[in-house]
Length: 121
DNA sequence: ATAGTGACTTTAC
DNA sequence: GGTAAAGCCACTA
Image 1: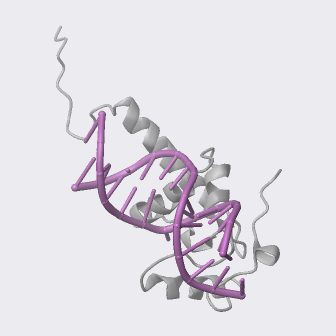
Image 2 (image 1 turned 180 degrees about the vertical axis):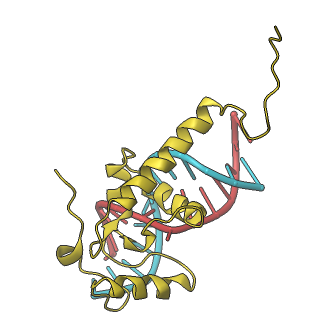
């Protein structure tokens, strides 16, 4: 027997910390993926639904870093007051995507009382 | 381990 | 209706 089995690159077991952060990321992405078309949620809401209370900023950073590798409706995530919080030129794309789903975006802002996502309580 | 940073939120002017 | 400051949590250097 060979107790030190070598292991192909990329199959190294993740450290507990890595697993945890990955799981958080997955939960965030999964939550965002649950936002129905034509509705929007805010960062804090996504964080809470994902089991990460008070971690709205984390949600934002996750999207910024992982949206390229996961097809999630990132554009349905807004600030707590319904404003587009995204920086850079993609803000325009976000508004466009939302309007394409029937969400009214006026002056970079969405009325959460009309389009806010209400997950099963 | 410390310090800086951010696609956030809330409270106070 | 705005802008400013502080609080917040997790990531990154």
